[in-house]
Length: 384
Image (cartoon, rainbow, N blue to C red; front, side, top):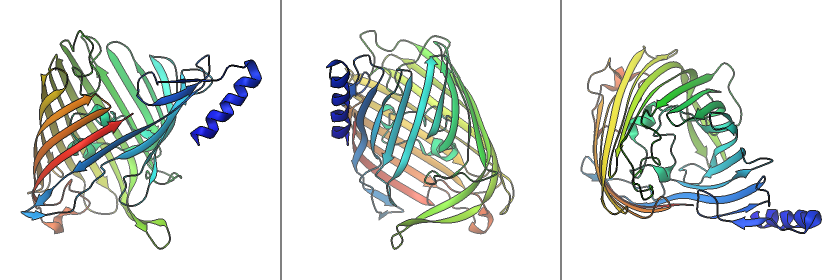
């Protein structure tokens, strides 16, 4: 496909002024892109992927493993002007079937004001807004996943300055794999991040990705919220029909609030998020409140290559229930061969999900299966 597009671009350029389009290395990524001579039209291709060996023991018994946590080919670029950009990516590492992950257009003539339109990640959680190559641990934090409003179809208004970032969006509240939106369903997000000492470094790897000046002392704070009316659904792939069977789990209203804090100080970084959510399941069960927090810290102990980190997580899925808390402790050694494009991560995780009375759960969803889990991960991350 890219070959056909490149050939078509060459023919068009020759007909105009005998100048073929440039073939260049993308400005912020490895890989390649085809660009017009003036830079107004550009098409790139890349991949975000991870490959892992991960023995898992649950209550002392060996469990099944996942070899590909994510496998995401993508195309991206800009049209007409550099500030009109697009991104489309697929998720191939799905236990059910490949699906469209993101497909959106950014219109941002000014850094301080722009919008994103299409299917994309909603802005609740600074952690969840990063790419897989930008986070410290092999996968996103379970507590952040639990409260995050996911990917959705809609519009996000956004902007950044040296000390502020803001995001505000309205979305359809529809399932990720559905190309249609449900009537009467909606989700809204807002996030404000303040960095009073100046801009923070790259993702959760500020020192590793810094220039010769390193990652000077910076602090950053976020306040954020979300709310909506959605219909929870369980999707199962039907191999006989080649389609998804969708089981409705009922309509629910929710309101979520959260804060985060980040500190970077050269080789040391600390990051934490905390959430509270009130859920009203209209058809099943009574209202309940969920609270949770997680934090991580890391230190780059050799050049900008070797890093050691820890992460702690806690989640109470329903404050009204007993024996439903989740506790997770993780430790990691990471080798960034060519950050952020190539990295190897060795992580140990201990997790314990308490066992509430199933008859009292109602619409409450636990973040993990009940019991104690020990997990060892050796993961290779590749992104370009």
